[in-house]
Length: 86
Image: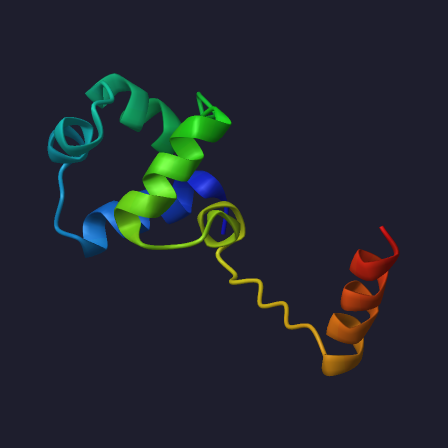
């Protein structure tokens, strides 16, 4: 899935029209339509705002997949060691 499809799916799952989403996000309805039709790409600030609004990560908004990164204890020990050197 791409951003346009994901945005439309999220909007529809939340039972919002383009007008309602525009009102909630202070974007123009034509802007929402442009994103959903792939005519426009949002700036970073808008991606952050939309991710927050829908309670998803920016990774999910852009790719449809959640990225989960966990650091091992060894990684944290290395990070702590580097902090003490600085």
